[in-house]
Length: 192
Image (cartoon, rainbow, N blue to C red):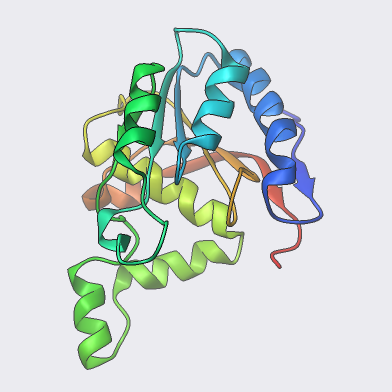
């Protein structure tokens, strides 16, 4: 099999529309209906919804965990969430599957590195978007929002917008070794 992979010279939102159009084409070819999107304030999720433009798609926006509310502007507001949900997009806010949980608190206090953060750092070698794509699939699976017997598409990015897209056989965090990244549709070529 041969497939086209988009490699973006720079990370960031300038890649978003090209990525989403490419993703929609591949989702149609593979008959993938479940699209998970990292979306801090809803912009990327809305862009996916607008391009995919078909009610058959289950679009799930995964926002930044509320534990980051102390960082100015990082968390989705109530109005942003309501706007997405009224537009037919499911919104998930949960603990990040690849770090920033209880084990991270112990590491900050006593030193060391939790396993989740080691896994996270390995995915960062591909790109921040790759780490987030894997993480949001784990989070959506754990919340019961996706079927576990079908391939899933995940879209994420670096900073803002989307620059990474993968096709995944999902798994729960506790069954992480069952997760398979089956295709990389897009990623930034340079990580900075």
